[in-house]
Length: 584
Ligand code: ATP
Image (cartoon, rainbow, N blue to C red):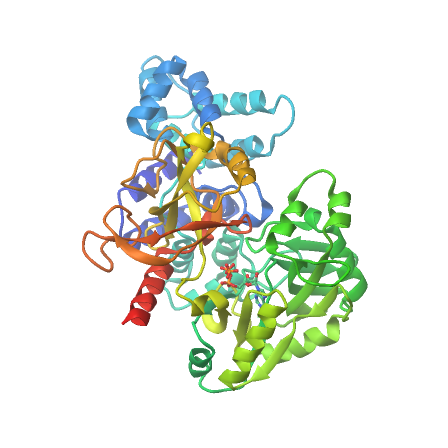
């Protein structure tokens, strides 16, 4: 497959906004691609190289991307920089600079999809001393053989800025159109993707074996399952009504980190909520699984929580952050012990349990997890009485939890879905405050006074899932400790951008832009309409977006969430509407 055909298709996609049109073009591209190359094509179309859970990251920092471009085009660094700032896009700069260069070139070797893919994979995987030079050499050789249009997409991919607006679900639609002649089989493809979230793998399965290939995709130890998520309601009464008066299962909602635990014999792998491997943060948790889980082959879910070893009490989420370090993890294990609170079991032995009702899974969980001071099935109560639910909520809060997750006992495990089969109830919902929001840092303003020399305030965005863009929603400057203020520039530096990053929408212009990456938790007094912020622009009132009043950082950096997992524009609109209802 020639990369020129892929680049041409990307250029077509860029000019489109309708999902139908995008799907049709993408379906054509999938059909034209040999099956063996489909996985790489699918990853690349989403600006990736491997499924997210393998953690292969491109995203070359701005500085290096510009150096690569200078090297390949032969242009002076100042000329490269001015082209970049003029276009506000590294891809357009590459196209322009290579157009200038190509006047002199006679011919070059045609780029293939395979070569581009393999080179980028090598670039992403190189690390250690001398790796920067090696990366630049690889890129220069690729760009040498690239046409200006190809260079546009190679550079955007390398910089982590290929934003074609092709969401996972669009790829699944396109695969259904291309290989199954329509969308009827769509839910079955989606199921396959939710239990095996490797789009390249799923699309290749559809292409090679049709619907049988899709139905054969199974839950597998070692491949993370997309997590089931909870909706929110503001009272016990509302929850019981939503569940139509049935006896529900209320569980403690612990304030820790979600772990999806995959065990095959003595081999234990831990995945975070965003499906990254985090086993190295919690080797002691892996030992607890080996010692206290009876199934040798299993997939379980648990909330890992820091505890006070003497009293057994739960400690706040922040304590877990000490586990993030690369060195001295043995010391961190001793200083910050943890407990595992299991809340689901998705596979036991060779049985896939995701299709079984919650009540069945809970029973199985109780049989599988030994109750010790460090391991237990999460406390749960069955009831259909709102009063009892309220009371249990008080107990949960007294015990250091955030609230409850109320579960429909008849529901299967709905991988990847946020539905009312799980409903969270938190204390904040009952006060004037809205729920906390997880927002993406898209910019920052330099500090003054005590904060001179560092950032004083941050511009935050929220993800618009329909349009695949980040829209500004608030500016926040309170709630940051001195430690946070010292740490943030370091966390954000790799994502700094001298131009407004593609896919970021904001009328406000910060001193520094950041590519969407860092997610932080924010609490606010209420949601308000705003002419300045672009989140949900026009969806409640023309010319107005939604913003936050008195936003404050809670101290939580949500590195267990990808920017796409941040509180979405739709959720914010929902929260705003509920707030209006409460006031009326
Ligand atoms: P939040 O910010 O409230 O944690 P979230 O977007 O991370 O929300 P939700 O699906 O809204 O995820 O809430 C469920 C989260 O609560 C899970 O991801 C998990 O980490 C945590 N949790 C704690 N206790 C439980 C439990 N008993 N059952 C399910 N999830 C639980």
